[in-house]
Length: 168
Image (tube, rainbow, N blue to C red; front, side, top):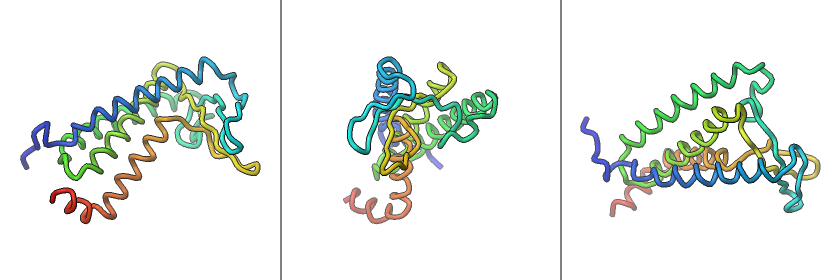
């Protein structure tokens, strides 16, 4: 199977990965330098800025494991990032949804990887809540990962229809 040329592959979406990475690291820096730890700052009735550190994975999975999980999550993030780069290289530039989704996933993975390597934890600061129910705090990288996964799922479910429309 012949590999697509750079301009014909989804690698053209790497600019989006860089945008996610810059936004993620910039907002985490602002949150870490301007917010007091675990002290919510109300923005809207359902939205606070609350600085929290997550040593685990999604929803604080393995956060109390004693420290070894940091290295496990770093290895996983490195492997996933490498896989995403290969997947981007092998994905055609059109339709655009798969490449965009993969670039968002890669940006989010690299943002949280940076935190784990440099800080030993992921910086979270977005807190959503309603009537006493709190969604786990998250960050821009987590948002990009969620959006990227959503785009890939959308493409898997409806990709045939959108691919034909984009090619015409």
